[in-house]
Image (cartoon, rainbow, N blue to C red):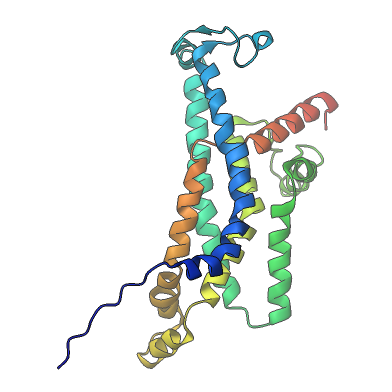
Amino acid sequence: MPKKTKQKSKYTLSHFKRELPLHLMLLPGLAIILIFSYVPMAGLIIAFQDFIPSKGMFGDQEWVGLKNFEYVFHLPGFGQAMKNTVIIAFWKIILGLVVPVIFALLLNEVRFIKFKKTVQTIVYLPYFLSWVVLGGIFLDILSPSTGIINQIITALGGKEIFFLGDNEYFRETLIVTDVWKNFGYGAIVYLAAILGIDTDLYEAAKIDGANRWRQTWHVTLPGMRMIIVLMMVLSLGNVLNAGFDQVFNFYCIYLGILFSGV
């Protein structure tokens, strides 16, 4: 029998010309990353200086080494702040992966197309809203006196809860509201991954006697694994980011509640 020869694919000039428009489409995104992510990293040098703004970025600044970091590490609230940041970021990452996957699996079981599209739109909408807008919404929902949730709690005989000011509930409030805002985006991504799974795999699973749960466990989830891993890797970039916009806006709401007595 004749031996099979391996053909090595060569990236020729014709390939490059054919794919040139695709490469050019990447340039705006690369430019944005370069300008807003890499160029500002040059400013990290001020962390090691006794920086005086009036002298400018490239002025005659005094080099202090790790003195600024030592100062921060010895602040009284540094330990608690770091602990809160890690806990909040950890649960945001975990729930930000688990909740969209479960929701996408449930939404995939819906057979009424119009209802399915309506639900997708509703859960996706908060992702486009800023925390400034959502802050006002959560003020109406979580206010200790006029909030909807506290009105329900008091109507059932419970005591009002200051969700945005009580240490016992504030971390959970940050986590739950962030997951509620962002899980719609992840659910759409995972739903697209589910729709890309070969239907022949489900047919083969049915022939083997697999029920709907086993089809989900052995076909759907393995078919989503690459997207799940990708989303997990992307979310790891926020491991020490508890969400400045969210915390800052909630803090402003907290001060507004205190001064207005709402």
